[in-house]
Image 1 (cartoon, rainbow, N blue to C red):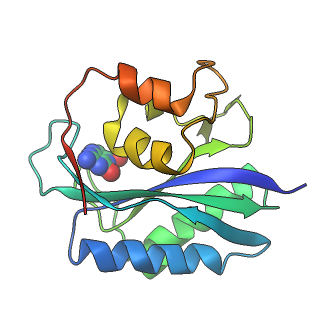
Image 2 (image 1 turned 90 degrees about the horizontal axis):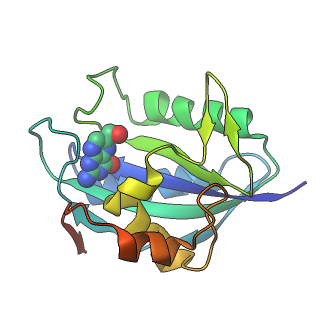
Length: 162
Ligand SMILES: Nc1nc2c(c(=O)[nH]1)N=C(CO)CN2
């Protein structure tokens, strides 16, 4: 069955805007998948304490028939094969980070994959672009709309629309 999945994109190495555009093009080539919404791009302060360059972040909506773990596998392959991402420190700089934020109404916590993304509600760099394309979407655990989560967010984390 086709599901809506929301993917968070982030890059802070090289031509960040070009990398986001390339990632969106690659997502559109995935099997059984269509890109059905793309958020504006934001330049965002790095979160997580490691001193590094600002990120560009965006969120896309996919309509996909791929199962969550299949989608995860495809995203990890894109990160390594297309963007040559190398293993780096946990919160460190990255050429391209592709995270499944939400997958339909699914709530899942396995070793490989936690959905919704466990830090979604704390991250302005994810909530802001997500709220641009899906403000009324309800977080399946917190039971609140994305726009509410964004409004209630107290942590700073500057984000600037490009
Ligand atoms: N602003 C911003 N900060 C981050 C990001 C990111 O995508 N944007 N990704 C990280 C690694 O998951 C760590 N910190």
